[in-house]
Length: 216
Image (cartoon, rainbow, N blue to C red; front, top):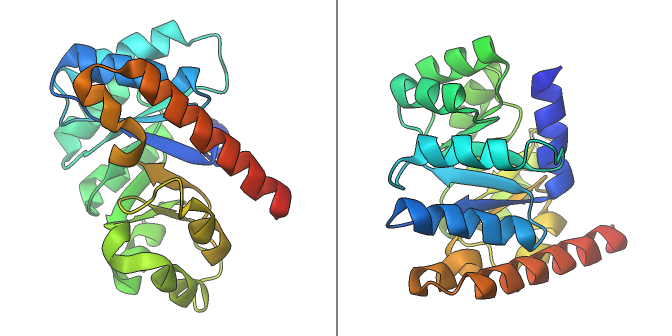
């Protein structure tokens, strides 16, 4: 049930904010700015310092907001995955598939969203319980890849990351993706400490996503 609820929350959010940062404070403030802007699904990457502490802090801060779902990104191995899960991460994202991470996530009822570039990789991930497949990098694979994959695998739920921006987001959804991962185009202002600009951009993303929903 926990896994299902998390997947529904991610799908409802429509956009997963990929949050990085050169410091713990920058990553934390970026995540908060995205949430303030209406993007409630946060992928806190383990490239950020003390990522597990940030995840724990965000989970405690938004414990009463059922729409906020915080996960961990750039999870490359089973040790990092377990650290993230124990810190409160509700989903795990990775740039590639790892069998041991998949099995661990299954034990904890945690959605595992590994990065895949081929149909073979996607099938393998699905066999190990992945219900949303991250295609990465999206900028290389493109919307045409999504359409091609959905022909033999219409049941696959896809999240492109890399190459998604405010201008082309509708094209990804038209191609058939379930959710998108938004990174630098969403959070670029955070590097300059302008978190208000991140919130403004998040609001623009949210507005565009709602417009896309209305047209479906």
